Amino acid sequence: MAWFRNKNPKVPAWQLKQKQDEELAVFMDVRKAQREWEQARLFFEEAEGEEQIDYAIYMLEAAELKYQMHLRAAKRMGLNRIQLPVQQRAEAEA
Image (cartoon, rainbow, N blue to C red; front, side, top):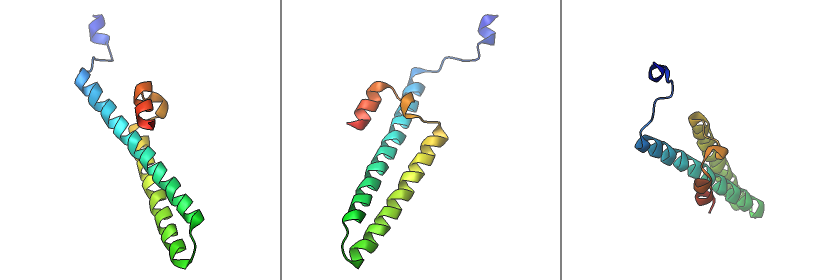
């Protein structure tokens, strides 16, 4: 009766692949939002004049909110950078 007590039923390979693809997509969204936030921060640091500064503040706030939104989505999925396979991490960071 050992088969009955198995609490980890086998998951079909296509479901595992689908989950990995979703996790990679969320990870990529987080990385993209992080880069956008860094670019907005650099633009803010280089802004000159009242209009550029106002625009830079708007862009920085929007980028921060987007980054936070994607981080929350990753957290809800229980996603951790270390959990991604090495090959996927290398592809995502390239």
